[in-house]
Structure formats: C-alpha cells, structure tokens
Image (cartoon, rainbow, N blue to C red; front, side, top):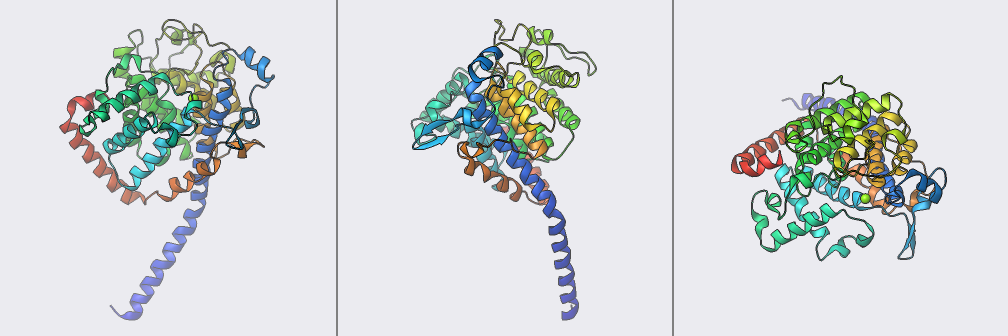
Length: 437
Ligand SMILES: [Mg+2]
C-alpha cells in the first residue's frame, strides 16, 4: 500500500476511535454513578439497619430512637481503634467477598464453577482461624447461624482435603435444603448483577450457585437470582416495570424446584390478586411473592401493611399477618422489590422504610439500597456519610466495575466459552449439578 494512503487510513481510524471514546464517555459516567450508588447505599442501609435489626416492633423503634427512627449514620456509630465509624454488618462483608471474586473472575475469564469454588474457600476462611485478620470487626457482624454452620462444614471438608472434588461445597455435612431458606445468600447476591450485566443467564446461574454454598433451598437460589438480575437491569437504566418483570422471570426458573419444598404453594396466574394471607400460609412461590410486593406498591399499601409492625412468627416461620419480615430469602427480595417499586427515585425514603421495619431491617435496607442505588445513581443523603466503615475502599469498586467491562463482542465470545465450560462441567458431574440448578 502506498505510504500516504496508509497514513490517511490510519488517521481515519484514529478519528473514528476518538469519536467513539467521546460518545462513550457520558454513559460510562452514568454507569459509574449507578455502580457506586448501589454499593454505597447497600452498605449504608446495612449500617443503619444494624441498630434496628433486633428491635422487634415499629413502636419500640420510635420509642427508643425517636419518631423517625434511624435516619443518619451519626446514630449508628461505634468507637473503634481511635476512630468513630458506622460499621456495616455480615451482609456487606459477604457482598464485598462476592464482588471481589466476581471482579477477579471476570478479569480471568473464569467459569461459574471456578468462581463458586473460590467463593466457597473465601467463606470458609471468613469463619476459620484467621477470621480476625480477614475481618477485625468479625464479632460485631451478627453473622447468621446458617452461614456460620455451613462455613464450619466447609472448613471440615477442606481439612480432609475434600475441596479438590467437583462441587465439593455441596457435600458439606448436614446439608438440608428444606432448612436453608434464610436470607443469608440473597443479601450478598446483588454484586453479580453489576459485574456480569448483559448476560442474564450467567447472572442467574452464578447467583444460584453462590447461594447453594451455604443456602441450598430453591427459594434462596430463586431470591438470589432475582436480586442479582434486578440489580443488573436497574444498573442498565431499565424502568421499574422492566426490573420487576426481569426479577419475576429469574425467580420463575426455580418454580418447579420450589414446589417440591413449599408443599402448600402453587403457581398463580400472572393476573391473580395476591394477598398477605397467602404469605402467612406459605402458599406463594418466590416469583409470586415478588409479584405480590409489586402489586402492593402499585396499590399504595403502606410499609406497616407490607413490611409490618411486629416481628411475630408462626411455627412455619411466616408472620401471621403475612408481613415481609425479611428473615426468609423470598421475603427479603420481595421486601426490597416493594421498597423500590413504592419509592422509585426517592433513595432516602426507600432505605429509611427498610431500616425502620420490624424484621431483618439491615438486610431489607441493604437490598433496597442496592436496587434504588443502581436505578437512580444517587447516594443516600447524609451529613455523616464519611462515617461509613471503609467508605474509601467501597468507592474504589465503581471504577473497577465500569473499566473492566470489555467490548461486547469480546465479552460475548468469552462468555460463550464459559457456557461451553459449564456444559462440560455438567457432563462431568450431573448429580452435583442437578443439586445446584
Ligand atoms: Mg446483617
């Protein structure tokens, strides 16, 4: 090729590339804001809810903390190593582990199985002998019994060197799906939606797989998948209705498995009127609980009707009034959906209503925070924001989430490879895989 023609061609390519970079600049900033707001709001809701998590009626919350309850990180501080901080809880500790491993996995083009294996080891370490060097505030986190018990069982497998086998985390001692439907895996699932945005099935499969490490009930997998996909859709700037429909679709992939455990439930038609009494009787699948929460928000039902006024539970663990207390994974994701659909762009109110609810306040507020943050790009307004534990470290994630995003064509190719990888894995270990999916 003639030298001057080649020079002109190179110049044209350079101009085109710089134009593309310019037009891409603005959406990148929006995405960065959304990722940042999702992460910070999840941690803020968690830190605020730490104060109310074990106050079991809305009356007591008002009596102890004032008529507005907890609204500022200034009300949620402790003195630690010479600093006044508002610490978050187990929800954010575990969500950060998922976020770190998902980011590493994306950079390394790792398969779902590799990332799940890394997560199982990371959860085991968090509860192992090095717990205080990994998390100096470990004692303060109020880790749930299920995460604690499952992690201990994982450590026992590691001690026996059984962690080299395929899907080893599914052979942990005492695994009992029927008893593993708490919200301890859904609360850490949302980062998957930010990191793998654009590949819905990858998000659903990975969110479910990470749940099964500690929570093998299909409702926990359904709730985790819905939460991760909802966060991805919010992050992409989809409407509230599109986010809701995506979350319902994600949970529906687990309907058939859930029916085996929720023996009083049946799938409801899409236009059925769903009621709190159905929740009290454990008659709704996770996908329908999300639909119930969306309906309740559209009908203008108030938080005291939906999230409740007291923390009373029946022997089936449901509130006798069908309140979404949030201790169970399906209630937690439905409660977060209600707060997003009810408050939409009002980040402050969405989080405050979750924080000052009678049930698992920190998890509800954290999940609602992730969704409204990803949806609006706005961080919770609080003069005491700089008190949030590790806020500087939390702020570093948004750039990693946005910058690591590869061009769609390359990413598509890599993800197809991952799917092939997964198919090979399914062939190798059909039993284990059946238990995951
Ligand atoms: Mg917590």
